[in-house]
Image 1: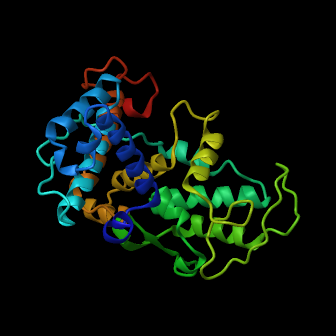
Image 2 (image 1 turned 45 degrees about the vertical axis):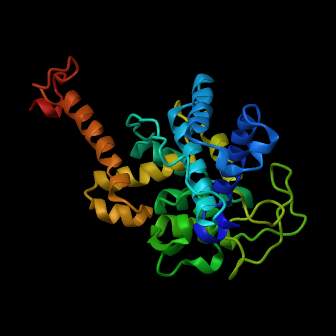
Image 3 (image 1 turned 30 degrees about the horizontal axis):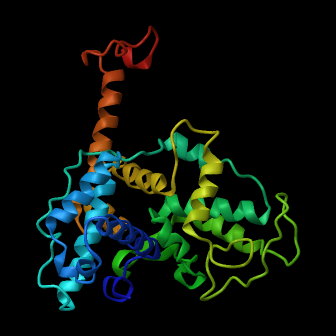
Length: 315
């Protein structure tokens, strides 16, 4: 309840925290007596360091270790605020240093290849196409996308309301192409007992107000996991790279930056609390610029930089 009401975290984060705490308690049970376990104040920073080391020895990535430590810091912070323990034993444990990992993105041509692929007028295909267009047009997190209702979308002004981390809301544009994809999806409402080419019966649910924007085949709200599976099926035979909903979010930000969008505007569109989080996209853009420079400039030092005879760059 604390995570849901006070912190406003997503259901996915709550499930991750529950799993992490269960794993931590399993580790601690092997090291403390039953009496000690009944008193949370007996757990100290050495126990937490021991837990993280055991996970590291198992080959867990630094990003996962950092998340598990963040979970423990949040849990013991709650216990301190609630008066159950006097101090937070995780507060003195430093998060593992992580290298800068650049996000995977699609090039503009790859994004067009993905988004232009669907020509079907079947309900499930129209829904999937509208999902992909909306993810790429808005930069939404997948958890934000599946939480959108019809009342959150203004197709006339081409705006959508997203509910992000910590219950923060933002309104972002989605553009004409995504709007048209949603309209196509809306114009072909599913009918009860209608069988799609996949053999799945489409749901019969009205498209209005508090109804979810994107439905599953039973008429309920689509889950983030279902969107991830759908995108994997759409891309695993088309691209050598792994494409996730977050890949489209990264691509959205990088392509805006490539076209000269202001970094702070991108921060607002993405719903980042800190500009530092958004600045990672400048590294992606710089890498792309360097690749173009190496290929095109005759004095770049690259073996591929000298254009062939007749190339416009040579004239």
